[in-house]
Image 1 (spheres, rainbow, N blue to C red):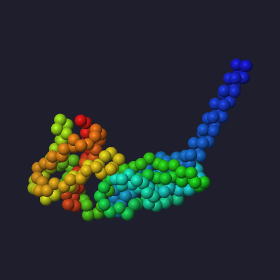
Image 2: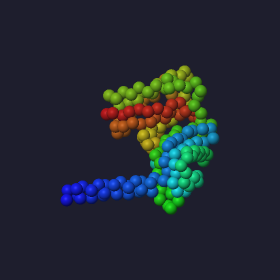
Image 3: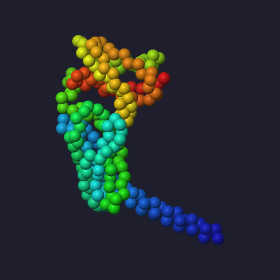
Image 4: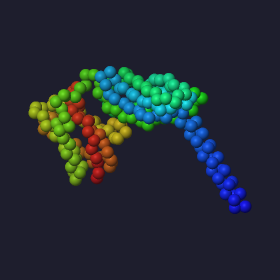
Length: 220
């Protein structure tokens, strides 16, 4: 009886693994090996590649801004069933505003089921909004005074800025705060006591120049 029970357990274990394997194949018709996004002068370049595809109808390209509400913007046909590497690219030329954007792929099976890729994030810098070539990370220095819950932003450049726009984003790209500073020279003081503990991104922009885009940590 013990041997019979043992073989019954083995049988159901193998059956479960077989069904699980088949289910995963049905759920994951595409083996995605990379998905990347780059900001270019012509828009956002998306690149992705697959190792294998099974009944792959195609890829719906979805984009989100700071609201993090994804919408479909275009469709790229898949390769059906393939056991050889495939490479795809797409250029999103519809953006007009500077900001942090998020992209993902909706991978659609011929029979209708779909899955989503991981999300990639990219900072878009449109034509006409350019960073000064002389700028380096050392030109804008962030000093995080955690005792005072304050960022001291040192602008290591001679002269005065008529206006600087400071924006703060959370780690998923939602814009949380914007403030304009007039007639700035030397440094800016930004009190972040209203922010919860976490990692944030801070952007500094002056007219058509991006001065800095850096990460800082809030730890009260």
